[in-house]
Length: 361
Image (tube, rainbow, N blue to C red; front, side, top):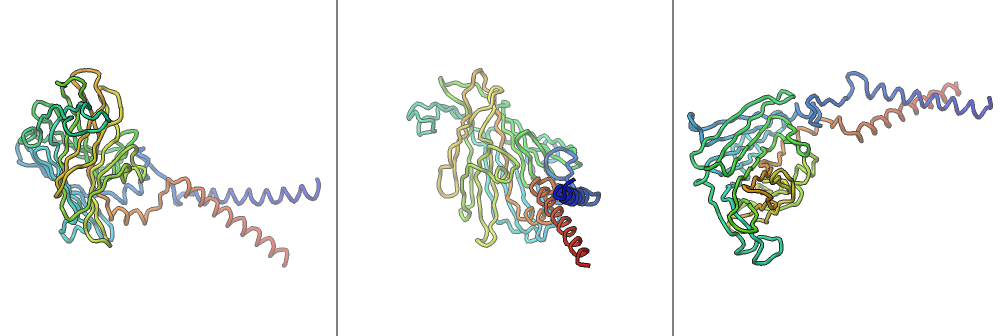
């Protein structure tokens, strides 16, 4: 065997040992390890650290038609709180960045105002223009007022509590299903529900009366005039890989140094008659804090039209950001590889230094 070949083999053995040692250190019991018992792609350590206390109250005691949900962080330097109230087809969302202060920094209300029929015939451009709403079926208080909130409570696969609320409008034309969980909860292939929001499924069953029309919903949004509203094609959940294909309106208030944000987000697609396709959503139009927007669903191939649109309401939690700073994202492959390389390089360098010292001695 040549001297050069023996030298190469010695180097190979050294670095092979370094890589083996790195594997042992990175994967050893007690070292950082990714765990996901419920299969929602969120590490169990992060789920535990960011679990929230959720309290639910419905009223009146018999046949409730209203509810209040309060969700508060636990263990952050400054714990935050958000509240969701519902009655008569209207949701109100409030955010308290400091729960102990009792001060609401940001809020908005969202009303499921009406079922509409839209015909793109005044200015055929794929937009909702003046005069193109052919029919309006009013909801709000007249559609949901006094109708029962049905409550279901269950435990998710990882032991977190989940609350689900179902409200049907008069004639079952619109069904609202609100879901909130203590921990992260995978609700579909494309969405993981975070603990800082509630999922809102909106189901519409409507028989069209206008030729060539598409069914849609009109939302009424009321925003505190001191807060600022913005529309974006990517929601916070999309930017943080908890959802895909989702837009949002975020309402931001509070101080410039410490802003607080509440939001209404929705999937860019809806399922109509079992087929998923693009939804036309108009940007909010209005003044003095009162806005209107339309969500028009894909054309139906049958009657009555059955549409499902998935949305969510929640907050951008400052406490959540604080809590995950102390929890390393163990499932991050980039983190794993970088840790592996650093450990291997350290072990290898240590071996080379030790070998050189032995030669000097």
